[in-house]
Image (cartoon, rainbow, N blue to C red; front, side, top):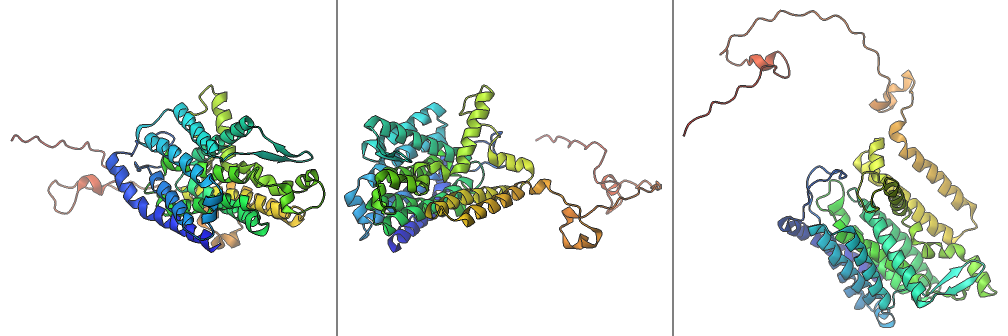
Amino acid sequence: MREYLLTLCITAAVTYLLTGPVRKFAIVAGAMPEIRARDVHREPTPRLGGIAMFFGLCAGLLVADHLTNLSEVFEKSNEPRALLSGAALIWLIGVLDDKFEIDALIKLGGQMIAAGVMVMQGLTILWLPIPSVGSVALTQWQGTLLTVALVVITINAVNFVDGLDGLAAGMVCIAAAAFFLYAYRIWYSYGIEAAAPATLFSAILMGMCLGFLPHNMHPARIFMGDSGSMLIGLVLAAGAISITGQIDPDALKLFAGSEKAAVHQTVPVYIPLLLPLTIIAVPAADLISAIVRRTWRGQSPFAADRGHLHHRLLEVGHSHSRAVWIMYFWAALIAFGSLTYSVNSASMWIVLGVVILSALGLVLLLLPRFTPRVPVWAQHLVPPRYRRRRAVVAEPVEVEQRTPVAVGVAGVNGATALSARSHVPERRKAETSR
C-alpha cells in the first residue's frame, strides 16, 4: 500500500506542478477557443490540460517501475506498456483536437485504433464469468470487439460529462478510488497477481485527477480538453479490462463446489468488473440520453447541445458549484454502493443505506424548486429566501416641484441628480483636428 500511495502522490505532484506552465503554453499557442452557445463559462479559458495529466501518467509508471514490489507488475505483465502506448496515441489525438478541432468521426477512429493498440499488446478480455453458465472463453475476435467497444464507450462517457469546472476530473477520481479499493482487495486479500496492474492503473488515475483538480475547480483557470478527458477515460477502461476475464472464480475460494456454482455465487463480486459503466453510471446515462435525444431530432449523435445532465441542473436553479457537488454525490453513491454490495451482498443495511441516500439526492436535486411556507414565529430561523414577504400597500406619492439648476453650478450635475439614469442624449465629443 505504501508503494501505491507513493506512486499516487508522485503522479499528483507532477500533474499539479506542470499544469501552470502548460496553461501559459496553451495561451501562447492559441488553444483558447471562442465561447460556444453550449458553454457555461463567460471568459475564454485555455485548454490542453491533458498535457500535464499525460506526463503525470508517465511519471507514475516510471516511479512504479523502480519500486521493489510494483516492479514485478512490469516484469510479469505487458499491460503497463500497452496502457502507455494507447494513452500516448489518444493523448496526441486529443491535443490536435484541442488546437485544430478535429472531426468527430476522426476522433472515433482514433479511439478505436488506440484500443486496438492495447489489444495487440495483450490488454484484452479473455473470458467472461456468466451466472449459471460459468466462465465463457472468448475468441480472439470476440475479445477484441468487446474490448474496443468498452474503451470507446468509456472514453465518450467521460468526454460527454466534461461540461462544468472540475466535473469530469472529480467524478473519474471518485470512480478510480472505488475501483482501487476493489482491485486492491482482490490482489491483497486473495493473493491474485492478475489484479495488480488494475490496482496500479487506478492509483495513477487518482493521482492524475487530484493533481489537476486544484487548477480546474470553479472558476477554472484551465480546461483538460479532449486531450485530458479521453486520456482519463482510456485509463479507467484499461483498469476494468485488465482485471475482467483475468481472474478464475475458483481462485477466490469463496465457495466450494463447481466453477458454475462459484461464478453464480460471486456475481456481486464481478459487478464492478464486468460493467465498469456502473462505476461511471452518471456519465454513461448522460451519454445514452444524449445519443437518443440527438438521434430523435435527426441530428448527429456527436452534435453538441445544452441538454446534458449538468446543463439541466443549472436550468433547475443550482449554482455552478452546487451542480458539480450534486454530480459528485451521485457518482460516489453508485460507485461505493456497488463496491459495498460486492463485498457483502447479503446485508439489508447496505440496500437500506443506498435507498436513503438516493432519497436525499433527489431532495438535493429539487431543492431550488422547494420553497416551504415557514410560520411567522420561525421567520428569523431560516434564510431570507424562505421568509414570507409582507404585502406593501402603495401610497400616493406627491410630486415635488424641483427648481431647475443653472448650468455651471459647482458640485451639482443636473442629469444625475434627479434620477439614476439620464434621459438626455449624451453629447458627442467634438472632433479635434490635428
